[in-house]
Image (cartoon, rainbow, N blue to C red; front, side, top):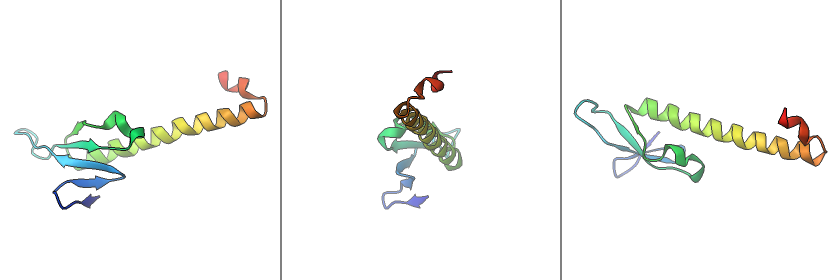
Length: 86
């Protein structure tokens, strides 16, 4: 995690901003993220550790999703695409 000059953090191409509340003084919000991680943009988390976990999870899910599409295309190219439907 990299601390930026404006007080925000940068982690795996996501910009994280501190948004403390009375009950949760360590609360943070993801204010910028890549297009493939738009599902976590503007979400609030209790602390930086939970934010890191959410970013890593979203990236892993994105890789799995694109990986399955890639495998399906490869199977279709060799006329075995119908196997992926079962």
